[in-house]
Image (cartoon, rainbow, N blue to C red; front, top):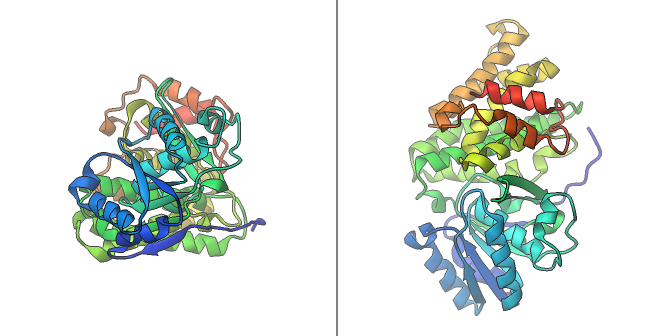
Length: 386
């Protein structure tokens, strides 16, 4: 186990109806930017409840809607200017990972004199940021208690991440009932995103990390048990509660303590969704099994452990390689069973831009840590994903 520091400052307020208390958290600030996506929070009544809570607490606010999946830099720039003009000192993201990521990027950009995109291209590091609060509507990205954000720049179709301890949300309201209105496909994409966040941490070459191995496996098994229930029944509170809490745990850095994570699959998927604008979770359901097939011989025992402990593959199933491959196949079947694509063709992604995606993914160096991935490796993974 490696040395580590674990610190997560996000206050989690979890349960039924908790969003009605958002004003009590926000009243510590002078003016709030209410940041959200499309019309779903208005049609569901969530917008009205949040506004009433803010007004009851005497919180002044301005609004900026319009966040899209794979949030755009152009709206981030608009939010930065609005916050500066209105002297905003808290950004309240009401939505899923895209809204939260957009809010985090705005938070970094307001006090910065340059272009916030610098932080996503390693040309600068944020030195300060506005505080961010969250009312979560989708269990998926884990951005509600993470230090990371991902933004897409339309010019060049570039989707890039940035991490900083400055952008951990100060508080996050998690009510599983707020996920009831999601279409089953979006719920399934969230399940895939959550499992991917665990898998990216689980597949490591750091030795003697049994505790976090077991935590990862328990969280994965929770998703295997409750993810399909949440997809099948939009009002199954217990299933949605388990999935929402698992999504938070999966990406708040607890499961990565003392171990080197990978993140190669995420970087590959960013190229797919950056060009084709597919749902991030759906892209991960395609890329993760293909990545596994490319790298499993790097540490066959870890893939055997994954197959046996998570998927219940019997040691008597066959030799180690067969067990490992069966575990990968069962993950793929799991994604397919909840209605997700497991190939690029199923997402209507053709094979004519694979070389471009491989080149862009590795233009700043290799990806991943479990196995270093270079341009030809990424190309082979994309070909396996066809």
